[in-house]
Image 1 (tube, rainbow over the protein chains, first blue to last red):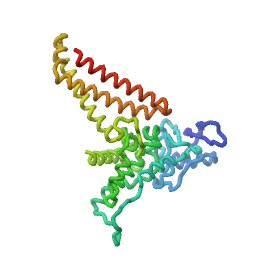
Image 2: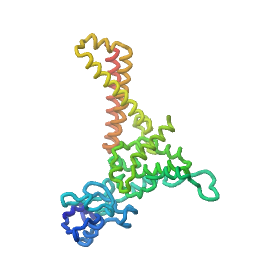
Image 3: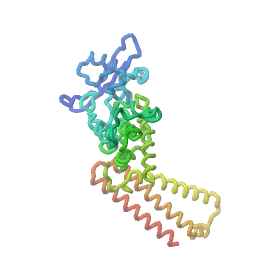
Image 4: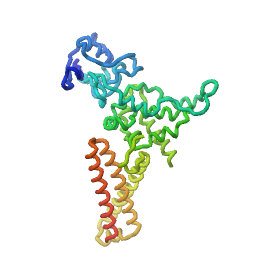
Length: 234
Length: 115
């Protein structure tokens, strides 16, 4: 099959280019894209990409495969290859450090902005702060986010305003703490989001939902933040 | 919190709400106008004038006009902050939109109360 890989090494190349590599899959097996990258690296050791756990938990190998973001380690070739061709590009919208490795600083900055930790100004109890099973269930579909950035880098609003729009990943986490029964900073959290960019740059096109490798729904979480803002302000 | 001084209501929630409320008003006005024209196929000048002589229709039309201005401002402001990156060009674009909106309101009032 033909693999077309985005290559850019700022120390050597003047501009990014696409490198076409023909490769035979051993035994014609349906391997994961990450395994394919390993085969490519054996052919050309200068190819750079991030990877770690190889089972969709660490979120290191988010990349754009035939136009759709996803994790290379849990995406089988059969799910993305079209006409025996695969185009691999770095996550869109973030600065490229080298080849498929992007600079995630902007993404983490937005995550930091939503204060991703429990804030509770009541005196700490002798043991832990307890939740009922129902209160705990409110966090399902929110806490599973692995911060791979597939969603935020698939979002045009994040491409145009990565410094102002929190992005689907950050907003999913914002709601994760708004929905937590142990958090008492709801009012302050909402006040930080009530501007024309942080939440409201989301126009609900749901690219985030269609690419999330963990099957989460940031658009729904953003809708719930909006509902909380409305309930507080009307 | 991101500060914006050229957005319609400074607050994202307010702009979002206004965008939806004005959309409903514009939809109601559009449906009414299309319905009125469909149910009066052989309308003449006097009937058209009589329609806009009624105070209720003037209020409805002015409401739709102001809604259009608010709706357009919020929409065009979003477009400008997405796609026009140089601050000077963005400010000029927003100013032109604001000027046009003002002209349309004054012109619309003049037409409505001038007949």
